[in-house]
Length: 219
Image (cartoon, rainbow, N blue to C red):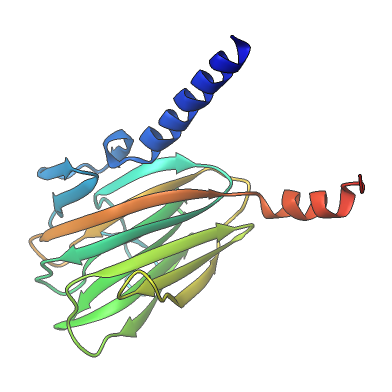
C-alpha cells in the first residue's frame, strides 16, 4: 500500500514538473494582442515599437516587449528553436533570462540592415550588445542557455546537434529567474515569430555536487 502510494505520488510530481515546463503553464509579461500555443509551439505577432534596453548608447530605457516565461531557481539548461518573418531593423526573437528590470540577458536572432545576426544583450543597470553576423539568411536556429553558478553560457546551433558558444555572461546566482521566450520590434510594425521545442532541464547544483564528492565517506 505504501509503495503504491509512493509510486502514485512520484507520478503526480513528475506530471507537475512536465506541466510547469510546458508553454501552456507559463505566464506573459507584456502579452501581445495575437498569439497561439498549439502542441507546445508558440506563434505570436510581436508587438510593434517594443524592446528591452537600458540607458547606454541610446540614452533611453524600454521594457515593454512580449515575454512568455516560467520562474526557475537554481541551475538549468533552456533551449528553443526559433524562426521569424523579420521585416524591419532590430526585429528580434530569442530566449530571455530575467531577474528584474535592471538585470536580464536576451539572446537570439536580430535583423539589422537586411542581415541576420546572432545577438546577445546583457543588462546590469545598463545594457550592452554583441552580435555575430551570419553570411546568409537562415530559416531557423536553436538557441540554448546554461545557467551555472553565477554565469550563463549561451550557444547557437543550425541543427540541434552541434552547438557553438556565442556569449558567456554574469548573472547573480541563488536568485529566482524568469526564463522563457521573447520577441521585439523596436523600429518596426511587428512580425510573426515561431518558437518550437521549448524545454527547460534542471541541473544539479554545482557547488553542492562538488561538496558531496569531497564529503561523502567511503562505504
